[in-house]
Image (cartoon, rainbow, N blue to C red; front, side, top):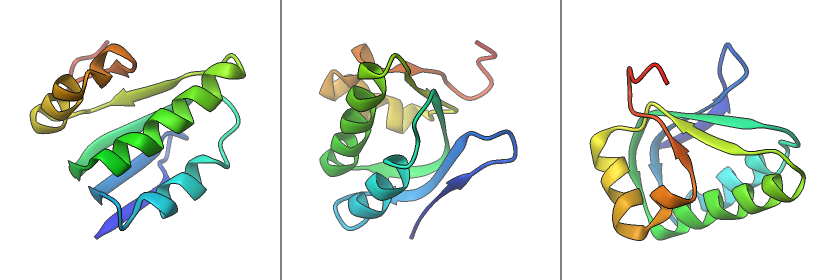
Amino acid sequence: MFEIQFGEQGQVVVSGRLDAANAEKALAFLNGIESHCEIDMSGLEYISSAGLGVLLRTHKRLSQEGNGLHLINVNAHIRDIFSYSGFDKLFDIKAPGSGE
């Protein structure tokens, strides 16, 4: 199951599996964001190439408008996926409890 919603501090909170089956739902939600976006990934269990594509498209769109996409509370498994794909060079990624 995949969930995407706004958290109490205005950040986007994702949980479950962001894969091809849920990519459209995630993209539709993220397309509604027009300014700086912080995504809390503490509940994300898995991300596929389709999910990475959603984040990339959102990042490119926001960057063109002078805003950014920041990923917080990224667990070690998800961070590895970003590293293997080279996406760790594109995104500002913070581990849980990093306080950065």
